[in-house]
Image (cartoon, rainbow, N blue to C red; front, side, top):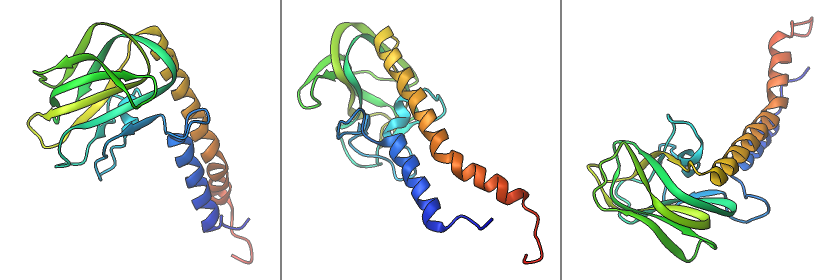
Length: 193
């Protein structure tokens, strides 16, 4: 068995990256986007991944406003949202919805953000896109969200399906590499090395 060529490893990595951040159902836009991303690896998708330890962070000093948005792929009803901020929270922000990612309607506004877990409710809106629009920084010159939680049934179901599809895409993209590495790692050298 020969080692996997470098181009094959690159191709598998490219397939994995596309599976995790690629377009949703033929749309040209990725499902989660942001106005900017911190260079130390805190992409927008992490604000909606269900992992309380991962996060999206904007680029430091990029200015305001900054935003992160989710494309649910279909209109979903929303009545509440919970934001789990990292130390770089927004002191002022809006939760907005849109049908086309061009025209936005504000569902809730917060002028006195304190960070941590902040719940916003008391609204009834429907939209394909959900955006957290950060207008003023807190104690740090950037914004960082661990998670945007959408506890209503419809967006919860959409997010669960998306996470399951992403997990399957990751497993499928890495399976050939992992199998090759296992075979290669257990291979005993013969006469030729």
